[in-house]
Image (tube, rainbow, N blue to C red; front, side, top):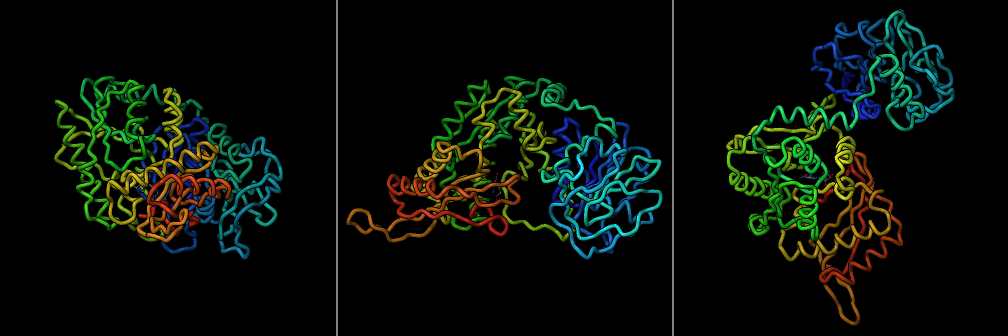
Amino acid sequence: EILIIDFGSQYTQLIARRVRELNVYCEIHPFHNVPEIGENIKGVILSGSPCSVRDEDSPNIDMSAFRGKIPVLGICYGAQLLASKNGGEVKASNTREYGRAKLAEFDKENPLFKDVVLNSQVWMSHGDTITQMPTNSKITASTSSVKVAGFSFENEPTHAIQFHPEVTHSDEGVKILKNFVVGICGCSQTYTAESFVESSVAELKAQLGDDKVVLGLSGGVDSSVAAMLIHKAIGKNLYCIFVDNGLLRKDEFEDVLESYKGLGLNVTGVNAKQRFYDALKGLSDPELKRKAIGKTFIEVFDDEAHKIQDVKWLAQGTIYPDIIESVSVKGPSVTIKSHHNVGGLPDYMKLKIVEPLKLLFKDGVRIVGASLDMPQNILSRHPFPGPGLGIRILGDVTPEKVSILQEVDAIFINGLKEHGLYDDTWQAGAMLLPVQSVGVMGDERTYESVVALRAVTSVDGMTADWAHLPYEFLGEISNRIINKVKGVNRVVYDISSKPPATIEWE
Ligand code: XMP
């Protein structure tokens, strides 16, 4: 496997995903907590960083455990660190280089550049440049404006590149990563969905034995794939609980329950709508609403789990981005919203936790799901927040508002599907605003609610752009909503990106 050492770059996870796409297993570890280099580690990649090696407290590591022993690839900051630690010099460049550049020259003999095409595009993103070469090294690549776009050390398999091979804007990036991981490190490309399923099922069998496991299904991809995997390992000893919190999409509870049963899962559907509505009564502050929903969920789940005799384990659909130890080099991160499904269970449940997807990225989860023959309508689902429509009804939540928003949301989502736009958007939904506006229908004055439609494109939900949906489509959906949904007389479209706006309004 490959060890990726993270110095805080926004692209670190992308490096890992590209390596995984080459069917090579890799893990990300923060620079301040590098694991011991065991025999299984065939190579090390040093990531980029928002810092400059010239900064006083810039992230640094001792490389003696692996330098010269196994291959190393420094990318961007990683390259500059290799330079500055070995007698090279890094300075702020006169022209900060961001964006596209051409690989004007490279060393064709260097295995890192095997079969790479001259003048292919590479993606630069740095403000520093290497002005003096480190000792015992030679330049391996240049662009028209950056002389040292790549260098390698003599007599050891340590390579460095200034550009980012992991982003799609680098035409030959995947080839360069493959040259490193497969060619130079000698990793075999055997990490596939099938191999993952096979080894996970074996591990789960050994870990769980005849124990009973409980799992909360949400209708989303992660919990569903986790359930299928555990089901494959222990069959009927997996007890799934699917809670109707009264804040799901229209018909979602029934539809999803059906498809779970179709997959052979042992699922109990729990209608807990009223408990949630009671808990939400009179609350209009977003954080209080989230907390009330989270707390009620745990209570309901706990009641159900207690009905299962001798349950020992709680399974969760945690995925790799949830557990990667984050590197915060530019100040502490703040809590923007409290996500109720992170943080888990009250101690008194005393269950052991099993998280079969905790080493997978989202795309990996989907691929594993597909290899388990799960239906596309589950695998390609948009993300949906745990607190559901509760945080899309601004202000206080009532069953009447929920049913208005369910109708609006269904028209929007079905419209996206009919027009082939669903898969092009990362997430979509509607917000019911606590605003009444004046309208006219027939000869009558109306004074009704406003809804906002929100659709975004994104890779991971951390940043997002508003989806540029066609005007004709938006017009048609607006008409349908106003004509069909009683209580709504105005539709607006949210054109804010994240940041500074978030995807959900609360
Ligand atoms: P924001 O609104 O923070 O949302 O831009 C980013 C992504 O997270 C989802 N989201 C949640 N998911 N529990 C969840 O499971 C939550 O409490 C929660 N809040 C937001 C949101 O739908 C989007 O996909």
